[in-house]
Image (cartoon, rainbow, N blue to C red; front, side, top):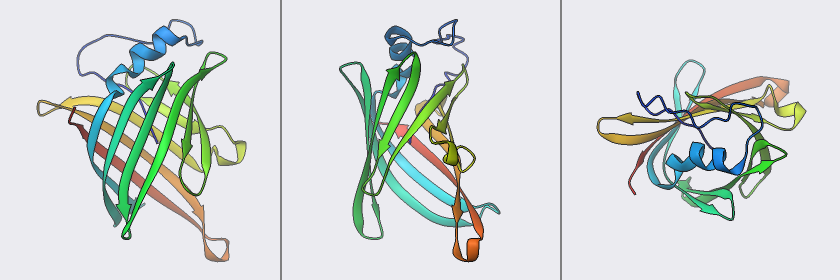
Amino acid sequence: MLLAILWGGSGLSAQPKTPVWDQTHMRKYFHPYVGKWVGQWTITDVEGVIIKRITLQQQYWWDKGHLKGLMSFEDRGRLSSLTSDIYLQRGEIISEVVNTEERNFYRAHPNDEHILWTPMKNEDVLRRRITETIEQRDGATWFISEGFERILGDQEKTRTLLFKVELKKVS
């Protein structure tokens, strides 16, 4: 899932002065996403115990005013992928994320430091959140995504999983 921007010390803001986004501001804000990224996706419980660590690749590109994304990874011996499509809808930034099991829509809440993605389905708003930043570290550009997901488990017991994705830009 996907996206936001923090350029260490640049002080440049790509945000429009009003809450309504247009194509120019969206392109400027998301331009640093374009390219290929590689790294790790770590899933933990709330105590920080690692449940799973997955190596993944992610790529973003522009297509007819939409920022398209493709993430691929191997999980339990199976090659998996998900796609994202970030676009404008009535002045809001929307992301559609699709994997083999489901399709989810998120609304962007960007600021100069990061972007918060919240589910558009009311029943998921308190169940899932994602924050993304792009930062400069050790002479490289990094995409950082952090969030949580609450899962209803056996006997109606809720389990919360935390995740962090750290990807280094390679092209």
